[in-house]
Amino acid sequence: MCGIIGYIGKNVEENLFEGLKRLEYRGYDSAGMTVMRNGNFDTYKSVGEVDNLKAKLKFNEEFGYGIAHTRWATHGKITIENCHPHFSSNGNIAIVHNGIIDNFEDLKIQLQAKDKCFVSQTDSEVVAKLLDKLNVNNLRRVLKQIKGSYALVLLSKEKDCLYFAKNKSPLYVGKGDDCVMVASDPSCFAGKIDRYYQLKDGEYGKISLKSLVFYDKNDEIIEKTQESLDFNFISEDKSGYDHFMIKEIYQSRIALENIIAKFQTPELESKLKELKKLMFDRIYLVGCGTAYHAGLIGQSYIRAECNIDTFCEVASEFKEKNFVIDENSLCIFISQSGETADTLSALEYCKQKNAHIIAITNTEYSTIAKKADINFPTCAGQEKAVASTKAYFAQCVMLYLIISYLKGKNNVEKLKLFKNQIDFGDDKALKNLAEIVSKYDKIFFIGRGIDYITAEEASLKLKEITYIFSSALPSGELKHGTLALVDESVLVIVIATDEKLFNKTLNNAYEIKSRGGKLVLFTQLNVDREVAKNFEMVFKVGLTQQDFYPMQIILPLQKLAYFTAVKKGINPDKPRNLAKSVTVE
Ligand code: M6R
Image 1 (cartoon, rainbow, N blue to C red):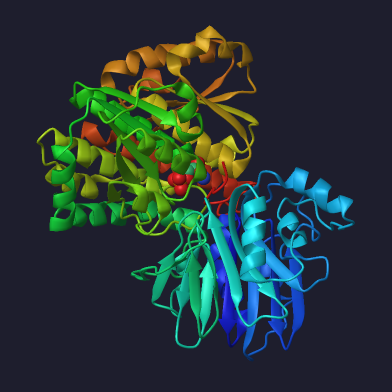
Image 2: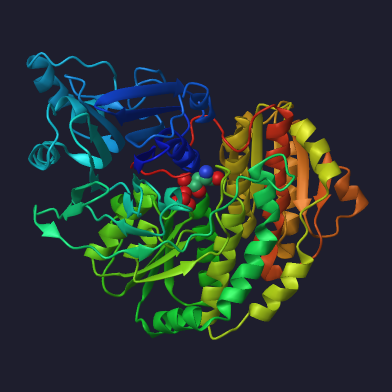
């Protein structure tokens, strides 16, 4: 995590600040910037959101050189001292870093023995302290000493260029006529530079207005191919909504329209045909957090439709599970950002084992999208809120369509119908429920079958943005332990969309009620009055086709989490301790 950016050109402070705003989804614990003009550094640092830096900046239109950083803390508290940039001992070199230097403790001990003083507790500062003079040879020497993941941009008082290096953390380089940029995400280039280079692991180099040199991991000078920035930059506009999260929940319908349109393009059809030709006898779905939950939905679709062994695993655990992975395996990696380090690492592991690699990403230029044999875009449009909402919806839809296609079905027409049936849930009822939820400090979500997966996703959403402890359980599991926690202080949200499992789920709900727990029901089924009496509230959504129950029922549950966060005075777009893109393992 962390976002880094370097810039050469006019209006350095303004351009770096704008870039930091676009990178803020990568972390917002602190922000910092160093600008060099006439051999002098000006440095600005602030704790908290990037906007806090603005008041400190002295904007200057003149030509200059600069680097900036927005932090998601991994090593060291959220303090000014730990803000990037970090500096060489002589103060001539400034660096910004995204990633983790795994051997920083050893290096720090060695450097301290040489009387180098550290001002921060970060791992990143060792990179700066390993340098006294910046040139390609010295950068190369440092890169051979550090281990771990890094995207680095380096600035020297003595040079009219920026140096950069990448290993396992994303980094892009763009060169325009009157400015150059290096950044964690090419969205920073939008409006300034329309072509960019994507760095590969081990690559490094230097860039000025006049020249650009790339080296590969064997220290050979290389030519790289530019890609055009086909990036529809999302506006900062919340379109009248109070937060991006609620805007993005409602954009699920647009995501669905986009997917339907995409499915009718020759480009997607050829990808599907390519996929259909592959021979495999096992399928793995891999992702983190919400993307993992979408994988579980995909797994249940595959198991229902195809007679093929299918496993879904969280990316950070995937390599530990000793799965049988070989050229007969199809591995599907799901990621909104396409940059999640755990997912990427699992992908590389499967690649080494010659598995077929499919990605389902919301960011077509991302590392995961590029490393896959076939990438299916989720077409949800950029998500800005940390909590993933429309991307989850789109991931589930994309998985559904791909699996239908593999089974020889074209379900686009069904989806068109669903588009008109989507029910986001009544705001008034959800706000009332949010008021109730906000008073609890322990909430369980339960469901059976596919509803249990929705319970997991709803629970993640709630805890992520409201900080209320919540946990999801298969309804039948309660009596095997967790029921011991149930008393009048517990609220249980029951998700029951599957008619054939409804009565069993109800029985489990009554077991909670008998022990004093309070119940809320989310369903699209008709509930008779006697049953309804057992619940504080029955939240009913409109009828849809069964295939789409999970995509339908999650929408009001996302909104419930949103309204609860708002009720508690929490900014749902930027929950504490989290970042939108998690680029460390
Ligand atoms: O970008 P990704 O989809 O790979 O991110 C995976 C998770 O970090 C992400 O889904 C996370 O769980 C969300 N904040 C949940 O809302």
